[in-house]
Amino acid sequence: MTPTRRAALAALLALPSAVRAQPPSWSPDRPVRIVVPYPPGGPTDILARALAAALTEAWRQPVVVENRPGAGSTIGTEAVARAAPDGTTLLLAATAHVMNPALMPKLPFDPVRDFTAILNCAFHPMLLAVHPSTGIADLAGFVAAAKARPGALTMGSAGIGNASHLAMALFASVAGIELTHVPFSGAAPAQTAILAGQVSGGFLNTTVAVPQIRAGALRGLAVADARRWREVPDLPSFAELGYPGAEAGSWYGVLAPAGLPQLRLAQLHRDILAALRRPELRERIAAAGLDPLETGPEEFQAQLAAETAKWARVVREAGIRPD
Image (tube, rainbow, N blue to C red):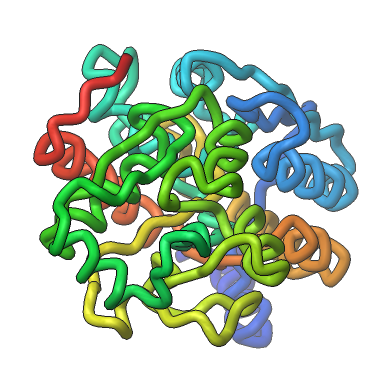
């Protein structure tokens, strides 16, 4: 080793360990786009725009939200799968990302293999609610009624293969009951039918169901999660009532194209996590009815694989065929 190199090494070793341990950094040197595969105005779009504003400030680089809806979120998703894995094209995906493969066998991308998971950043569960006219007071009564008269309870959903339909199919399988599915042409008409008592009930997002439960228009039976939901703390969860494995909800996570370099993945995770921890962003997430998450890349990647397999099994066992 030359004297110059010895001096350089000695200088490095003399630095405090905290300084030496700092990981190398990266930040985008051109505008970044966050693709939202849904129309403007929904929870995915709201979260993306809040995140884009925080990252624009952090990176001193424009971060724009690009809405590319259509074909059950697959148009925008495919665009990201085909983009360069350089950290400047991101996808804000939702639960449909892991449900679509079972419903659309000819997808031009793989939801796990063609993406790099960065961070699962928000979540809200679904809950099972019924119209008061059913006379059903709790989940035990719901299951008993379904077993006494198989198929008599009708469950409205936003359409064949929609998350509300798959949640119903999953619970029916776990509970060993038969329910009659009544698909509608979207979430709004399904909710209207449930509120009018035209169907027995359904699986609804907490943001929709909680106000109606508080008003007495619906009766909440259980949260489709492993734990209770902060907005309705008196409502038990499926897990505590003896139905683990029946969890269903909506998550929102950031993905990049497959092949994203490790340095850029680590920096994107750090920066997005820092943005999500800002009080003003947490307030916006809460206002949208979501709970913030801080899932790391490896855990999120494993979740994508596990949920893709889970919903494929539900679709197969229930014999669901999309329109």
